[in-house]
Length: 79
Picture 1: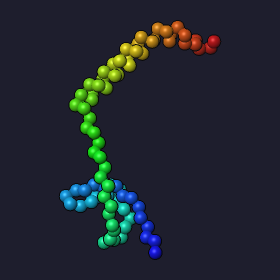
Picture 2 (picture 1 turned 90 degrees about the vertical axis):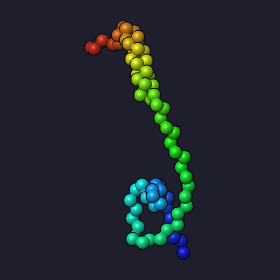
Picture 3 (picture 1 turned 135 degrees about the vertical axis):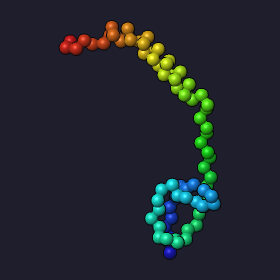
């Protein structure tokens, strides 16, 4: 007899596996768990906001430097 199986993402919290999404299992349903550890996400660098600000500023400078050329080559409405 084939028994259905599926994968459930869960968090181990205070000795209890807590599914990330609700499960449609009857109360007291026995299951077998196979635990596969997921590598923790790398931590963001402390200066991530400064890095994004620097990238945004560089993008602004680049766009500003390109503006004169874009204005010269941009088609005029109605032509």
